[in-house]
Image (tube, rainbow, N blue to C red; front, side, top):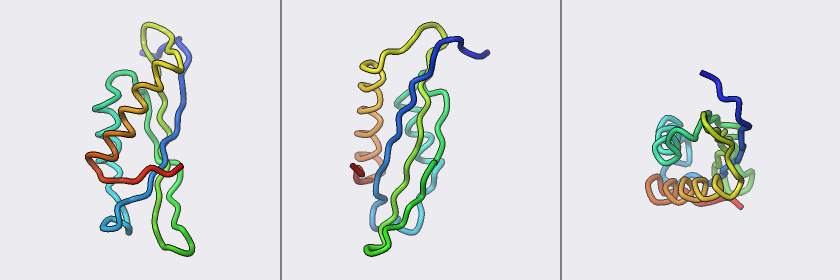
Length: 99
């Protein structure tokens, strides 16, 4: 089933932990985002895999599409969930937010 309600799209960017600087298993990120966001997360995709030219540090950017099957979502409502996802990424995967 496809929802007729509009989506809300947010990105989350972070630096990988130094120990995982070469690469991070994206399935761990997808699973964590879907666990925290639940049914409101419609899609997750890795949109950028960047290596800083001077430091060699790697960052990832993920695009998260939020949508409800039965109602429209407000940006404020999605902000709360998105903040919970960012906090879980930091706590569980030890990433550093990229601002």
